Image (cartoon, rainbow, N blue to C red):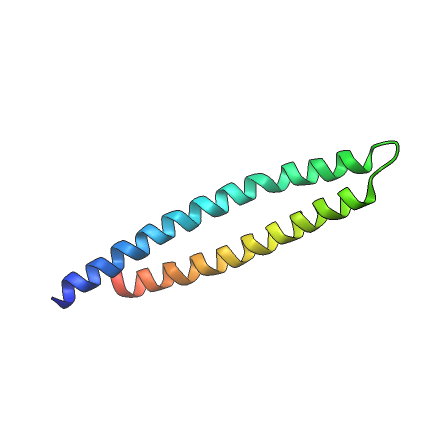
Length: 85
């Protein structure tokens, strides 16, 4: 019974790890696009400061989310390593 429960936990952790890894990969792909959008906005003849600030906030939020997701990923990997290997 306990082994079956542990296998279930391990499967759940493995699944969560895959999902978080995919999320991080997708989030990291967005970073250069946001930076390019910010640069394009700044290079306009009359830059819209509100738009620039909004995109910069979006970039900061995204980078923070990546950092948090990477921390969660490492925690899940440690749990998996401890319980499942």
